[in-house]
Each structure stands twice: as structure tokens, then as C-alpha cells.
Amino acid sequence: MPGTHHHIELSIPITSDQHELAIALLSMEGIEYFQEEDRKLLAYIPEAEWSEEKETAVKLALAALPGGTPTISTEFMADRNWNAEWEANLKPIEISDRFIIVQKKGGPAPKPGQIQIEINPKMSFGTGYHATTRLMLRQMEDLGLENEKIMDIGTGTGVLAIAARKLGNTSPILAFDNSSWAAENAVENIAENNAGDIQIELLDAEEDLAVNLRDGYTLILANINKNVIDRILPVIRANAPGATVLLSGILVYDEPWLKKLLKRLDCEAVRTIYEDEWLSCLVRTA
Ligand SMILES: C[S@@+](CC[C@H](N)C(=O)[O-])C[C@H]1O[C@@H](n2cnc3c(N)ncnc32)[C@H](O)[C@@H]1O
Image (cartoon, rainbow, N blue to C red):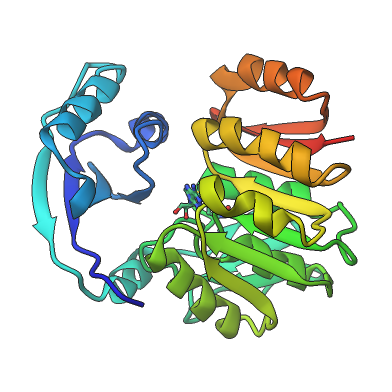
């Protein structure tokens, strides 16, 4: 894939009980890559997106933390082998009785009936360490998605597409992301899990959705964020009538906004589940 992946690392000195809130606040600023450490949170922004305005926006967002904006330090991070660094930090994470996510090398044996997904996340989102991913996986468990034609919007590590295959889905899956890093990583994770025949593309949901939806997807997975969902749900409603849409990446504080959006689009919230300050909503578009 072309392009480099230089990043700015923000080091935010906060205790781990503040990580979830800080991640939520920063994700509203479009920041999606985090690493949680003992006494700090590290956040990564592509170099091209870092500016004085962005720095001000980050500081303003973090002002909502108890104690106010912490002193943030920044460091330029040249493209490098994130793989090894993430692997060193990751621990297996049990999503439910049905799913456990392990890093590439090893992990505990799954319980009877439990599905093991191996994720080597590099810098992509979707390690299972974030509540929004866990909520998606838990929603998917009992959907009976064997024959659904699935579109996975913002696939990150590819974790949801892989999970769908491991739940017995055998129909076409299109998984895409607008980050080349994620798209590359998803391809590797799919191979690692022998979850073949998943089409991975570098696409932007806000530009390329309508044309791809014409292929007749019946289940659309979208763990993204409020702003993108606000713009793409009407496109899904118009171009994939009757499809089921599984949403995540929405803060509980934004549930009233979601309800209004669904009402406006004449969609039904079939099941909403929660973890920490996040929710996932299963939506029927007709
Ligand atoms: C919250 S992560 C979800 C990753 C994974 N699906 C999961 O559930 O863990 C959101 C992903 O959406 C991607 N993304 C954000 N905006 C997008 C857009 N407009 N089009 C395509 N992908 C987008 C990000 O690069 C990121 O990988």
C-alpha cells in the first residue's frame, strides 16, 4: 500500500479509571488509535491531521475530565513496527462465553463452544479492548447470520468480519476502511484466522457507500461514530431497504439523538445493549 504512517503520539498523564472517558472524548474529535498504559493514555494522530487547531480541540475536549485538561506532551513517531509493540502489550480478552480474542502467539484454550479470534492489531482499531467492539460481537452472537450478505463498514482489524465467518457465515462479505493501515491489517488477520474469502477494500463510507450497497447486502455492520453514522444511515436506508444494521461507537449520552434519527428514517431499534458509556443498537430499516 502506498503512503507512510508517521504519527503524532499524545501522552496524556491520567489514571486508568479516566481512560474510558478520555477515549470517548477524543474519539469525538476523530481520534481512533489509543494505547492504555498504567498511568497514562497514549493517543495517535496521523501526522497530516495534526495542527494547532487540532491541539486546541484536543485540550478543549479533555477539559471535561475530572480535574480538567491534563498536561499533554507530544512526540513525532516515524512509521515503524507497531506489530511488535502491540503484541508485547496485548492480553487475551474474553468478550463473552461465545468469543475470546487472543493475540497472535498463544492465549488460553477456549472454553467448550467458545470461538477464538486471533488478532494482531498493529495500529488498527478492533482488538476487543474497546467496549464498542465487544458490544458488536455480543450482538452478533445470536443473529443467525449464516446466510446474510454482510458489509462491514470501518472494519479496522477485520475482527467483525472474521467473527461472522467463525459464526458460520458463508455468504459474500465486503469489509472496508478508509485507513490503508487498517485495510492492510485486516487482510493479515483474515489470513491468520483462515477466514478466507472476505473482500477487503480501501473505501470511504461517506463517498463510496451508495454504489456498493447496490450489491444487495442484508446485514450491515458499522462500528464508527455518531457523525459518520448520522450521514451514512440515511444512505443505507435509501439504498438497502430491508437490511438489518448493527451500529456501535455511540455514546450513551447520544441515545436521544439516535432515537430521533431512527424515527426520522422510519427505522426500528430492535435491541440496544450497553457497556460503560457506549451503546450498540440493532436496527431494522423496514
Ligand atoms: C471504532 S473502529 C471499529 C473497528 C472494528 N470494526 C471494530 O468493531 O472493532 C472504526 C473504524 O472505522 C474507520 N472509519 C472511520 N471513518 C470511516 C469512513 N468514513 N469510511 C470508512 N472507514 C471509516 C476507522 O479507520 C476505524 O478503523
